[in-house]
Amino acid sequence: MKKVAIYVEHGGMGDVQMALNCVKSFKHLRPKTHITFLCDKYLLPLAYNNPNIDECIAFYPEFKELNFDKIYNLSDDVCLEYELKTNPVKKTRMEIFAEVLKIPKISINPEVYLSKDEKESIPHLMDINKIDKNKFKIGVITRAGSYSRIYSRYEELEDLISENSQIIVFKGKSIDWSDTEWSKNTRIIEGKSLRELISLLSVCDIVIGNDTGPMHIASSLNIPTLWLFSHIDGNMRVKEYRNANFIQGICGFSPCWYKIKCIVNNNPNTPPCLDNIEPKEIIEKIKTIHNKYKKELICGD
Image (cartoon, rainbow, N blue to C red; front, side):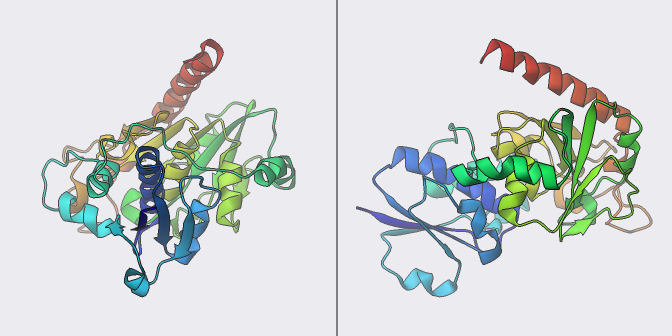
């Protein structure tokens, strides 16, 4: 049996999840290949319960000395090498990873895998976090890896949400819009393990948020998602996700990728294109998405 290693060196949560999505297609095409997956230790739980992986271990540089027939690098720098030199960017990261793996375009739906025990524990998680199973649950991802990707008007959504819905805010250790004043009816989720985060995301009827790792998890759970993009072209982030939708912030320059041209007072952390997205537009988009997927659920696909 051929043994291969697929690794993500110092990548973020989104990069690891996108790499895992590509591993699924790789394994489908080469089912007899033994796959070892490596990434940073804190992100390794993303690979748990994954039937496409035979072994997952924390990344360490010396692993390359082990007896692998082939080693594939799906790290962030592989994508940046292309994205920084290409204008306009026409390949998604999963398409770049597919080229590295020498497989066709990703055609199998991305997926995150919950164990039987995790699925059975979800009602308890909902109960202790006071999540109402009878309400339409809107997950909100307020975190991001940089300020340039953070939407600052989430609190305005609360006034537009009906009483039949419940907002579930997922906060994280990375940069977060922590000044938001949420009402007592909104559930704040923080301090959870990565596997608990996945389980709680899975109960949402829709997840909205910045261009950030948990949105890749939600989209890979096949939950309808609504991404909010600033300088990154949304088409180049969500194309492979079946139920993903997005709103692109508009400023005259967007999408400008890593140049971030619409800076305010010479501060690259405040691109106005993202905050130009009106909360009412988000609510209308949520309604459209809900009606679309509710119909698909009833009629089949």
